[in-house]
Length: 104
Length: 235
Image 1 (cartoon, helix red, strand yellow):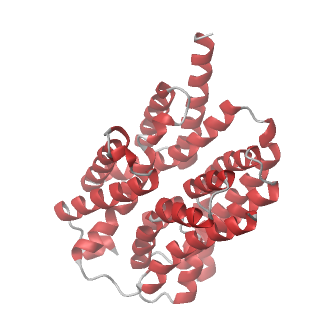
Image 2: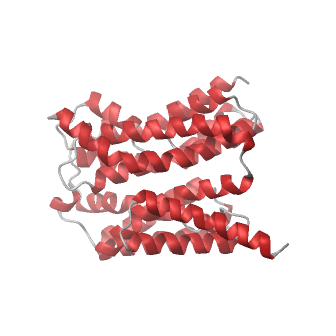
């Protein structure tokens, strides 16, 4: 099947998911429950995507655990987005290298 | 006025741009490793602007699955954007017209959304699109570079790059949870539910995209019941 057909299906689905709720509902939501619900959506969603997925990101779970700890610690210290991201990434790399070295 | 907002968005979007570059680098490398052309990888990134959905999409393409399966996969994995778009629409306010909303929808990624919602001042489409444009440049540029260099990159580096995405999420969530007790609860609940969907039998049969949606809805609904937000905060 043409690769372009896949890409079109992928792009159209993703865009419509984003565009439809944004354009159809223009009025402020009256319900206090719904407003509160939407207030908590970002935190809940990002958390669910991160954990426990980060534990399975590398070959060894311990690398993910250490990366998570480093990330959380730096985020608590209010380090910037890119610092936290780079540090977590570098931690996984270092941990995997170390394990590979020790297990040889 | 709108130009000034756009500029503020661009400045706010720079860290996301850098982060996206590295994550997209991983995507580009993976796409080429799976047999896609460099141009195809770039086209996917330019038209989708989403991390998890694109990685899943690669799997579908590599499997040569039906188009319906591609649509379903994207629907499930990306349905969180529907929730985010709802929240974003509320935050932008009723005065923002359809055209601007259709434009903002292009850039409603996890991180750009988080930037927009975290803004102290009133959120304008100019700011949102500004941040989104810079982020998109990083995403598409990173994909191109990754696709070009990918074949020579060792697996260990690609693994490390994939963790950057989680690092970005951590950087967004943790400070908010630290400031606001209800946010902390929202985080803890989502974390616990998410673990259930991975480690409890039967529940772990649910696809990861669907699990994210269910966790989000459950955690946010419980927090909304316990800690309802007043108008000023939600707007």
